[in-house]
Every structure is written in C-alpha cells, then in structure tokens.
Length: 299
Length: 235
Ligand SMILES: Cc1cc2nc3c(=O)[nH]c(=O)nc-3n(C[C@H](O)[C@H](O)[C@H](O)COP(=O)(O)OP(=O)(O)OC[C@H]3O[C@@H](n4cnc5c(N)ncnc54)[C@H](O)[C@@H]3O)c2cc1C
Ligand SMILES: Cc1cc2nc3c(=O)[nH]c(=O)nc-3n(C[C@H](O)[C@H](O)[C@H](O)COP(=O)(O)O)c2cc1C
Ligand code: FES
Image (cartoon, rainbow over all chains, first blue to last red; front, top):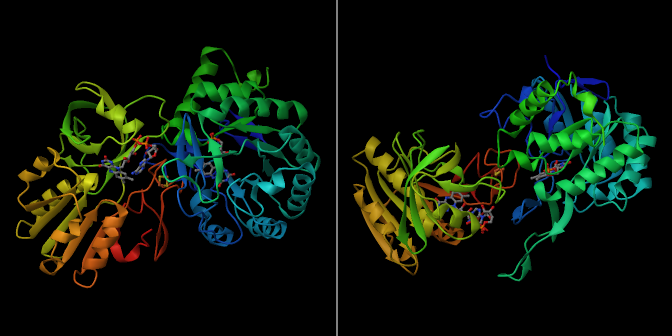
C-alpha cells in the first residue's frame, strides 16, 4: 500500500518528493540511477522566454556543507523547450515548469506559451539571485510578488506555485501576498544570497560578485521559514533547502510542508530521490501511519 | 562501493590509487570520487588512469581538502565511485599521434595510449609529459609501448615538433592546452582537448560545468570532457 499519496493543487502525487529546479535538468539526467517516474514530481531547470547562455566565470563554489552557485538561468528558452516538451511530459510524474524572466512582460508571454504544453504546474521563479534583471527582484517585496502572481494567474491555465526567496525581509509575508493574489501553492526556499572571495587572486569568486547558497548548511533556516509560512497561509507549501535524507524530508513535512523538493542533495548522492521515497514509505509502515498526511504539520 | 587495494605516494603530492572496481570504462572518462560520508559536500571529478576490467586506477594530486582525504585512505578502505561519466577520447584516425599532458593532466593519457596501442599497434605514439618536478609518477608511463618524453619545468611545447604528428590529444592546464592547440592547429588534422571545470552533479543536470564552444554551451561532464580543440573558446 502506498502511504505517501499526496494532493497538491488538485494533482494526486505518488509521493511528496519532488526534484528541485536546476538540480535535475529536465528529468532524465539521473536515469542511470533510477527511473524518475518514481518521484512525486520534477521541476524543470528555470526557463525564460528567450534562451540564456548563463553566467561566465566560475559557477560553483563549495562551502562548508553548502554550495554557492551562479548558473544564471542557462536555458534554451521556452519555445525550444515547448517543442520538445514531450521528452519531459512522458515521465509519469507531476511535471512542473520553473518559469523565470527579466521583466513582467517576459513572464506573461512565457506563461502564455506554456498553455499549449502538457505540463501539470508552473513554478514561478521570482527568487533567482543569479540574474541581473527580474529574477529575485519580484520576490523581495509583497506588492511586486502580488502583482506578478495576479498577472500570471490571469493568463495561465495551469496551477501556479510561486517559489519564494529567503532573501525577502519577511518571506512569510510575501507568501501571504502571493496566496491572496491567487497562487495555488508556494515553494520555498530558493537559494540564500552569499559570496566568496578568492584570497589568492584578491577577487570575488563570482563574476556577479554574489551567488546563491544551497545545501545542508541552509536547512535549519529553510525549515524555520517553511514553518512560519505554513502558519501564515492556507494554501499548500512545498518545502526545500538542504534536504539530504528521508529524515530531513520528514522534518519539513512535520513542519507543515505538503511536499518537499530535493536539490543540492542529488549531487553527492545521485540515489537520493529514490532513497527518500523508500525511507518515507518505510517510516509510515513502521509507525502504523496509513497516509503521511497524519503527521503533516504536527509541529 | 569500491575497495582500495593500494594508495601509493609517488612524491610531489601525487598518488596512485588502485581500487577493485571492475567496471570497464573508456579513456578520457572520469568518476566522481568520494572517500568520505557527508563532508565535504561534493564528490571530486578524477580521470580514469587505467581500467582493465578488474581494477580501476586513479592518478591524483593533493591540492585541497578532498584530495587530501583521498590520500589518507588505506588499503581495505572503501571509496564511492560515481560513473564512469563523460564522453572520453574518440577513435583517432591519424597515424602519428601526440599525447600531450601537463601535470596531473597526464592522468587520462595513460589509458588513452594503452587503448590506441591495443586497437592499432601500428600507430606511432609519442607521449609528451610535462611535470613541475620529477617524481615516481613518470615511471607509471614507462610500461606503455610508446615513446614517452618528459619535460620537468618550463613549457611542454618546447619539446614537441608538431610536424611529425597528424593528431593530438591533450589534457592539462587550460593555458597549456591553448598553446598546444595554437601551435598544432595548422599542422595536425585532429586535435582533442580534455577540459576541466568545477562539477557538482557529473551527470549533466546542474549546468555548473558549462564550456563555451562554437556550437554553443556544452556540459563538460556529459558532452565532454573531451572536445575538438577548434570548438572550444579557451579562457
Ligand atoms: C573531468 C575532470 C577530471 C579530473 N581528473 C583529475 C585526475 O585524474 N587527477 C587529479 O588529481 N585531479 C583531476 N581533476 C581535478 C580534481 O577534480 C581537483 O583537483 C579536485 O576536485 C580538487 O579537490 P580538493 O577538495 O582537493 O580541492 P579544493 O580546492 O579544496 O576543492 C574545493 C572545490 O573545488 C573543486 N575544484 C578545485 N579544483 C578543481 C579543479 N582543478 N577542477 C575541478 N574542480 C576543482 C573541488 O571539486 C571542490 O568542489 C579533474 C577534474 C575534472 C573536471
Ligand atoms: C546548481 C543549481 C541551480 C539552480 N537552478 C535553479 C533554477 O533554475 N530555478 C530555481 O527556481 N531554483 C534553482 N535552484 C535552487 C534550487 O531549486 C533550490 O531552491 C535551492 O538550491 C535550495 O534547495 P537545496 O538546498 O535542496 O538545493 C538552483 C540550485 C542549484 C544548486
Ligand atoms: S557537473 Fe552538473 S552539469 Fe556538469
């Protein structure tokens, strides 16, 4: 018996484990390790209306238990993605497109093009710290986050999940603003803005100076933010940030997350998605939990 | 999990790790190697020095935390090998092949040379291997049936006459590969370079290792690490 069935914005997921945007390509890259359709969902690499080459220079920098990245939303553009969308939608899981943009018009046009694509959800990325224009700017304040959520809701026929930035002064407030503007779900957190300096070259490591921190180092803060946001809104919240075991995933679920995403954790352990699905199922079996819902939000 | 059979100190911070990993792999491919549990976070990309169906060997240099941890492992210890990843060197058409390595970039050239000799014994191979200091690493290359020429210190290109070659495989510091490419490009028909970029996933999922090429961005871990020299924009 599958004890992990989870409802998210009208979709019945096999389990609450989603591969996080930017860490799982377009769903197929880890196939030598496991069949991606065992996951509850997969969020694509961030897509923008026009193709983006991404950032120059160093893109990755390891930190104690963390990873700074400055990929800069490298992607082939939404039209190119849409032409080959079957490659992702053929995976029997909840297919989520992570949508980015430089300005409101681009987000709107991108969302409109996706109306014809057989995807299950849009994850609105208003929290990417690695692009100059747009990106995180919309996610920093309640009014801009509300505006973009409202505008995308007007054009899209897909359920809309808004991905929040932990760099906002108060992420739960931004979550409330998005919920009030029609978001069907929220996901958090995206990366924390950080930086690194190469003392040998006496220069900032990244060409953009700042980059986004992810991985186990951010988990306690992400968990706290998810907990606060869950308490503040009545729409589903998908929690992520530093999850690298089924126990970590369970913490987020106990904090009230409807589902979790795994990002950086895939890198050191390419089997992580599979292991978390199994670990959660076993945990439920051992503890006589019929559906994982029973322990969701108990904190 | 692979078991370490030997982890030999070669001097000058270089080590040869022999594992019981019996998976076949192609020259130029690499593994994401992990000799620890949770920390450091990422596994380390290390080229396949040799693979014979029974063992997999790595030639590596201690430069930081991860490689330092690897160097402390003892026979019997376990190491995680994720891979083999990457495209590896293609079949070379040329008959007079130069394999040019700089420093620890010499590592993938051993298996490359061995495989070319196995498949096409008639081909002429010269290994040009540059190291900053002499060490036992040089001796590792002596059992290949090829002319191995060493340069300790200075520029490897000083000892290469590209006119006596029609194909070049090179791996090493980017500045060296760039120099090799520029000196060879009007003379040798085939030039392949093995690129080195920081990597997180190794499977093509994170786009952390992008290499700019004339055909657009390529993932060093999946579409590479070996590219045609004429395709790459060197930094
Ligand atoms: C395809 C490929 C094949 C390689 N083959 C070999 C080999 O056969 N032998 C060998 O000794 N080395 C090889 N390297 C380089 C090796 O990966 C680095 O020296 C190693 O990752 C350094 O780790 P560290 O923890 O000791 O150093 P640290 O500086 O502490 O590492 C910090 C972070 O930076 C990354 N990093 C640092 N230097 C490099 C580098 N030069 N290239 C890529 N990532 C780096 C590390 O992986 C780690 O994530 C290869 C690299 C690539 C990309
Ligand atoms: C290499 C890399 C690329 C990422 N790309 C994106 C992206 O395109 N869109 C997005 O919304 N988030 C992106 N993220 C953020 C992750 O989806 C996730 O929100 C963040 O890393 C925190 O979770 P984690 O600690 O589990 O990785 C990226 C993260 C990493 C490490
Ligand atoms: S290391 Fe992740 S795409 Fe190459």
